[in-house]
Image (tube, rainbow, N blue to C red; front, side, top):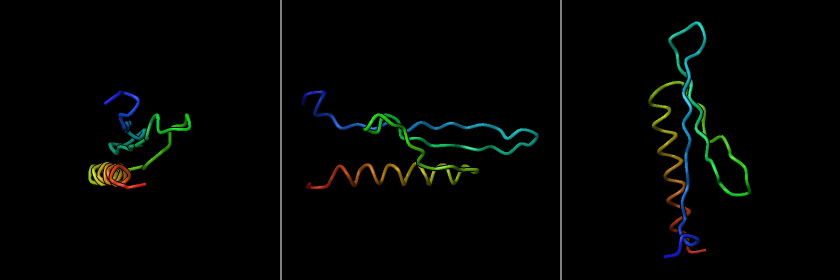
Length: 69
């Protein structure tokens, strides 16, 4: 399989602590997702929300890969 035929994706997870608190925030971005633009996939404020967002993104990616279009 040639590299040009290799379908891949990248998900960037950025996490930071909110100023003046112990609470964190997270932004998940699909990077290099075609058309030269990155896009925000989800915003989260708990570990469970982060895991759910990653799972949803992966499910969507895999569904697109099994399409017969």
